[in-house]
Image 1 (cartoon, protein in one colour):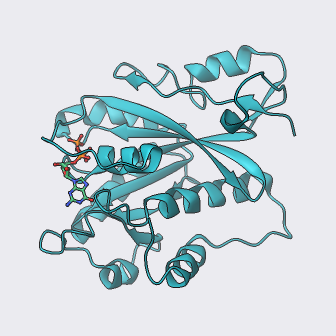
Image 2: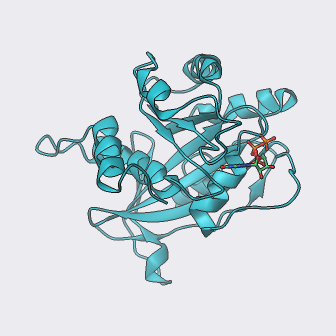
Length: 245
Ligand SMILES: Nc1nc2c(ncn2[C@@H]2O[C@H](COP(=O)(O)OP(=O)(O)OP(=O)(O)O)[C@@H](O)[C@H]2O)c(=O)[nH]1
């Protein structure tokens, strides 16, 4: 499998076509380039490029972080991408933004293009336009009752087979947190759940790695390879003594 260089992330507040390799923006570049194969909306580059090998990828997926304003979407993404907590005053996302990260999943370089949506109600229509070509969507919350509304929203706009993962963020802030791990696991949505903390880094890497593994598994469709997202998450958390950053 040859490899393609991952595009650098950049802010976008306009339309879904404004720079999505898996959507219509950077994807337009990818689709118009010879040697790029599109299968089930997944980008499979077939032509190598000359650049830093850590940026090469084999397959690319679009992941959306959604949730009410202030739940920590931007902070979790920055923690995952840069390994740091975005301290300081809270600046709400305007419209939408994205960052890319390439993960090596069982020898396959999987690029996640992660879209950080604005939680404020007034940007909801902007967000809706991005669901259509999302491969995965992760609703963040600290209130279990809020997940259902976000899942309804996702089901209304995204593809039926979109990969879902509920994230209970701010796990460090026990006084603020309403969704506990046991509550999350008991939720009856049939959707995998993880506690995360952008502040401490708890499960930030694991959450995105789990989603990348599921997406890679679905894309490769190897019947000999069995993968269950919630089981993987449970095992990894147990092996790490519950939680890891
Ligand atoms: N204690 C704690 N605070 C967090 C955590 N993640 C984010 N915060 C704080 O929560 C506030 C909101 O974080 P953001 O990441 O900007 O929230 P958001 O969901 O992107 O908000 P919008 O852009 O308005 O949708 C900030 O003050 C962060 O410092 C966390 O894991 N733990």
